[in-house]
Image (cartoon, rainbow, N blue to C red; front, side, top):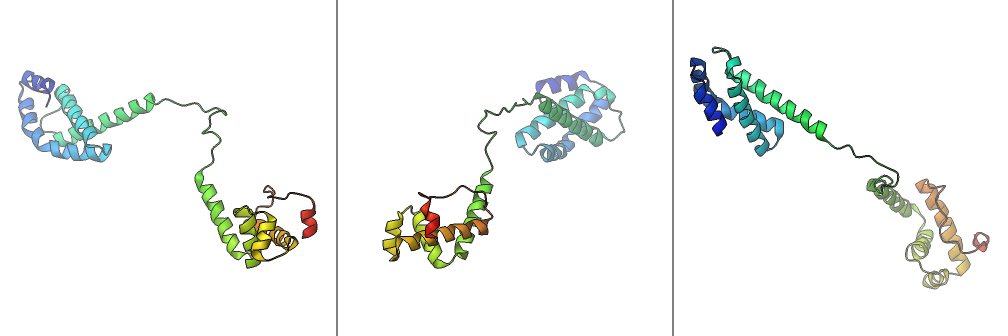
Length: 192
């Protein structure tokens, strides 16, 4: 107990003060458990119990001997905790968002992971010949000619399989408005 609390007890010379000091020692562990439940922090709980004891000593004239001291102390502790929560909520700074703030336009990363998962699942559903061309040209960024020589296919067949693979991939993932991938000239459609 702080020096302030000891001074206040010493000033109170009534029989209620003597009764109060006898009972209070046995109630401190219960007060601390309740304070820990409310604050979830041992330091904050100790501070709350100390504030409760100081407040109870300051308001000792309001306690009537023969009434439930435990209930009175727990009510003080609870009310002090509520007051602290209110004080903390009033002290919060409300941050104003503006459109120039980079955090304003960021999308959550989960959406990208889900989209990637959908694309991976759709890739496994593609026919093997379309998937291999799509991975070589789309993912490994190999030129059509290199992909054609690696797969031992004519360049026109690589372009055709690539177009069909991309089209099926868009349908499987539901991406109909997505940006067009790597079409260098208008005769890619003719190759399909």
